[in-house]
Structures are given as structure tokens and as C-alpha cells.
Image (cartoon, rainbow, N blue to C red; front, side, top):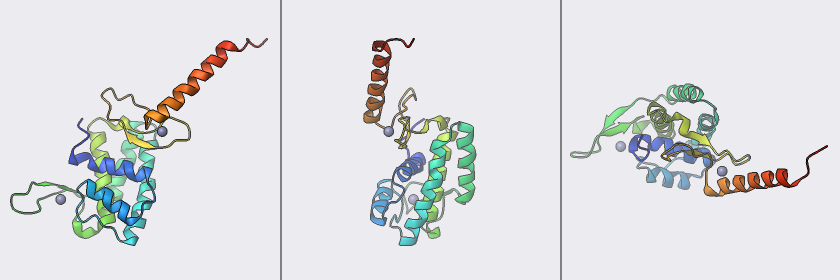
Amino acid sequence: MQFNTYTVAGAHIAVWLVNHPAPDAPTLAAVLRGYDVHEPEPTADETLAVRSWAMRLRQIFESPTVENKAELTDALLVAADCRPRLVSHGPGQPFHFHYAPVLTGLAARVRALTAAGLAHVIDGGAGARLRVCSRAGCEVAFIDTSRNGRRHFCSVRCANQVNVANHRHRQRQVSSPAPR
Ligand SMILES: [Zn+2]
Ligand SMILES: [Zn+2]
């Protein structure tokens, strides 16, 4: 599955929100603009509404099975009142999906876009790639876009920390005398 299309942009926005659950309005606007979201500047109320949505998004990444993730994401589609439409922004402009009308306000559009993005990832057979870092205490969410789909850490840093800890653990087991 392709992870860099506009179709799954909502999944990447979801990851960002899970990892930045209390953004201020300018930061949120900048991130949304980076994903070509229309009129991305949230009001104060919309910023708060997006924050509470981020907590629901986290559950998808933390749930253990694809079945769980799919059930939760399906519930998000309903909660977000996701209604895909084909929209063009002017003559000759490309048609693309909008998941909620611009008039519904930014928070509603972010809810619909993130729910749809996660749903597309699961629909594409990549639900198991919606993960949180395996290093205890890290909790950073990510989409595993690696070719083999076996990435379990959010960063090289977390992977190295766990590898070093495992290595020390093994060394201790080898060097300490067996208990009698
Ligand atoms: Zn558009
Ligand atoms: Zn991590």
C-alpha cells in the first residue's frame, strides 16, 4: 500500500495528533496546511475539540489486534459523521475526496479526515501497521511504512535503547554464576 497519498493523509494527521495531543492553534494550522487541508486555521473552540478527538485516536494505535482497530475506526467514522464527497476547487482543478463539508468547521473536518485516513489504511490491509512504540514508557504512535512491516520502535533512538538494554541483560545472564 502507498502511504504518501492524499487518501491516507488523514492517517498521518492522526499520528501527529496522537503524539501532540494538546496543540495550540497556530501549530495545528501549520501541520494541517502541510497536508493541504483547506482553511486550516482553527478557532479556540475548534482547537479544544481537536484535542479531545486526539485521545480517541490514540486508542486505535494502542489496541492489540486489527479487529479491534477496525471496530474502533468504524465507530470513529460514525462519530465523525464522515460523508465522502468529490470536490474540485475550480475549473481544471483536480477532483478529490472531502470527508466533511468545509462549512462544518475545522474540528469536524479534522475528525472526518482522520477517521477516513485510518479507515483507508485498514481497508488497504495495513491495519497492523498502526502502532505505538514497543519501548516501555515511550508511547509514541507511528505508521510502520517499512517494506517488511516489522518496525516496532518509533525511532532509531528507541530501538537502540532497547537493544542495548537487552544486550546488557544477556551479558548479565552469561557472566553471573548460576543460582544454587
Ligand atoms: Zn479540497
Ligand atoms: Zn519510541
